[in-house]
Length: 219
Ligand SMILES: [Zn+2]
Image (tube, rainbow, N blue to C red; front, side):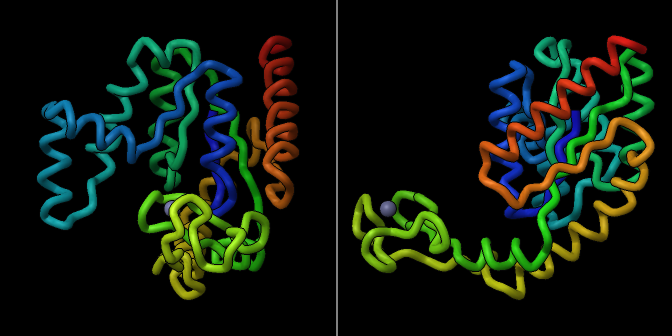
C-alpha cells in the first residue's frame, strides 16, 4: 500500500491510523535510513557517509535498504510505504520487487489537498520551542496568543512553515508526484479528498481499502 500526499496534508496522521487499523508497519525512507545508520549496518554506514558529505543518497542504495526492510518478517502480511516511490523509475523498481516476492501491485492512496489551502494551513502553524507541541491558529490556537498552553513559552513560526518555503516544497512535491500518480492511474489508485477532518479522510481511506480487498478476492 502506498500513501501519497503533499506536505501538510495530514499524511502522517493517516499513516499511523492505517498502521493501527491493519496491523502492518508503516515504512518511510527517513525512518529506514535512521534505523540502518543506528544499527551501523553496511548500508547504514554507506548512507551515513553520503549524507555527511552533503550528497543525496542514490536510488540504488535506497533500493537495497528497501529490499532489506521489506523482507523483514513484520512486512509479510503487507506494509504501508510512506514517501516512496518518488519517481517513475522507483515505481518500476517497486513493481519488480513486488512481483519477485509474489505480491500484487500496490494499492495507491493519494491524499489530495489544493495547494492554496495547504499554504493557508501550514502558514498558521506555530510550535513550542520547549515541549515541541504544535498549534494551528486556524483550528487549535493556544488559549493565550503566542504562548504555549503547557509551559508558557513564546511560540515560534518555523522557517519551513513560511509561505515561500511552503510554495517551494509544494512545487517539488508536484514535480515528483504527478508522473508517479500517472504511472499508477490505471491500477488500484484512489484519490482521497484531504480537505476534511482527519476522521472523515480516514473513513474514505477505509472504504477504498475495503473495495480493493474485494477486488483482490474476486481476481
Ligand atoms: Zn510548550
